[in-house]
Image (tube, rainbow, N blue to C red; front, side):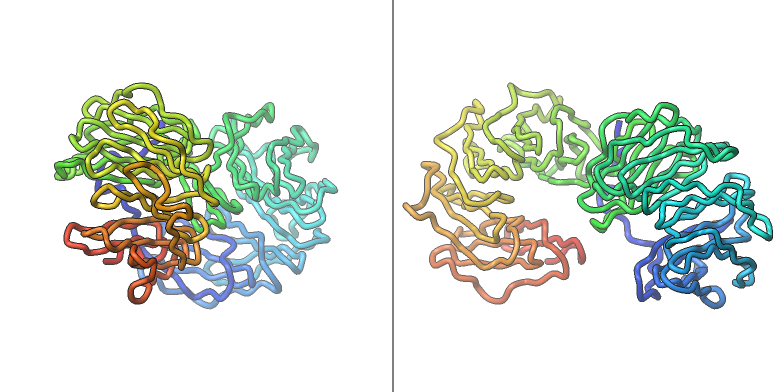
Length: 514
């Protein structure tokens, strides 16, 4: 079960407590020192710095590693740290003095990863040539094992909680487990990922392995058999480069090139704090319904922020859109599971069978002003219409050239406007569920997919928002843009119009603008 918030006020993302902007290259690793008041950060360009997180100030001088830096680890007692990278050397640093205290060889390629044993007595490192070195954390750094895997880049190494095993993630998309005492391979290769395995961590009890890959998935494995546990976790949309386990072992954090950090429950794999895809006020303004990536629907009390209904279960993929019936007795939802569903808004019980017909993600819903018709827009490039009393389809699907992201009825209900993947807006007759003409009305101007669309009061103007980072106003009679585009510094996803015609738009970068 997902550990999603049950308070309305907790649905919005928090702000960072501290932002450090002193690096001119990307950050490869971070580690808290004991006491959690200091943070070690290292960058790819070899700069290692310690920061006081209470005042945001750097402590002492930066420690500089020769060449690019990828591998990094800190001992459990916080007294020493180790770094490795392009120069093929493992350096040991004194945390308090910021001075190097040892320099060890043993690698023939770029060092990609470093890990400390639970008792701080051993350190493991993996390199570009496929070598894994396990050595003692003594002054001479005596090598205990130099394991030649012959597999190219070793991207991650991790000791088991009892220190007897070492797991590794490789360029050949596999995971392996070695015996620390003998250096022998005891499990693997574990196969399942379809791209580089960039990170490996153990569960606190040592029974499972968690891995992140450039195939954009997080996976759970039985550490005794190598068998996959559950399905891959697939919410990320770009390479996954880092994983971190919470101290109590109940949560896993993943960091990705999609510019997000996501959290997972380690017992179930369920997402924690899932993004909200759609929200909609009830007709009386007293309730707010929300659709989530955890496949569920929730209803909150607007005054108190308390969860009053849900989570409502039934969809089998992200809930992408939520609308209320005009009388407030029903909720209508669309999902990436390619279905539309009706729910009793008091009990959360499903009403009838799912509406099917779309063949790809159903991305958006719109209710006609009289409440009798529902329009749905899908990545299958069609608009479909449904009778809200029976759920029966109305007319034939309206075909587009590209996938659809947004849809809305005009205030009179006479027209339906939709936003497409290619940055175009189409306008159709809503009453007869047909084109406005043989060549449907088309408005062009956005440089990215149109994610939000709404008519201004009167129905003579249309507002759209887009991936191109802008919101725009259009004259629906001549298809021309009115005035300048309203610019955000990131993709614009959310759009709403107040009753007096104010425009609200939400961006990935700058939040809400009015």
